[in-house]
Length: 411
Image (cartoon, helix red, strand yellow):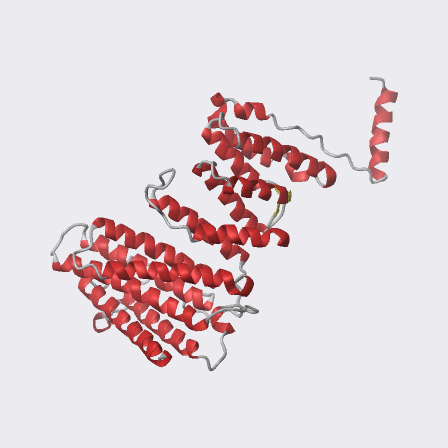
């Protein structure tokens, strides 16, 4: 190259810069044939990561970005729908679809066309459950990033249907109860992100029915005359976890301009769930003590019971106040939406007081034997199983009284 040609090239670059002309980065189309090769299955997650982190996806804007997104979505959808391709590759393809972004940022703007593909895959009867899992993760991500209002009602219906679907043994492709619970818990994440109580309060009302159903299941376990089996124990854990997540989701909704909410039913549901969890966990402790069992170790059982009761009580408080136990109610919370003279406020205050008492017991033990904690020093529980059983029974009795008074007033 002559010196004159070299200088001319430099001058052209400078002129383009001064005139404001921008050179679009060259697009490098993803070679999806590599993804389809079964020998590359283990490398597909890394291929997807590099594709989504590439310069094109970071820097392209406008028409060029739309074209890239459309081509990428088409290629990924083709892989996800091809039953001849390795399942792990299909799963990673649908995960990548959920990661496509119209615009990077915090939060990013999810690619609307991808949501249509995800919903279609999730709702098809013949879609394998592992693909539905990936599709649901993508749908929840769209809910977190923000959904086009035109599609919001459809997504709400999809998430509500998933959150209310019970495990039925022996129907279709077998699924473990824990897997069904995962789908339900994930759907609740999506509803939490959307924050709406729904048209005429339909989201809140539907979630309340789920919470009451789970409370009923826990109450049924308490009525069993025999000692609870290991299977009963596992069922109580799954049931209380799901019910607690529903309560927490209710606290994530915005009640500031809500309509169609039955304040008495919602308050009853929070109290009933707290009582049911205290009862079933108290029965587990009582059964253990009465049978003089040694397995699991008392310390382990103690920790497990406290964990599940705390998860429930803190979720219930969040459900009513949209905040933690020590904070004031959020301005968008169910509690803040109540009129000052509504009976529901007094009953929620009683629930709050009982939860505070129980939480203090968990932290400090029996009142007559409390001592100052040593800072930065690990502390064992300051109570045994019998004292825990008594504390749960005391809380349950107080909440039973609240429910009975309300029932008497209703008559």
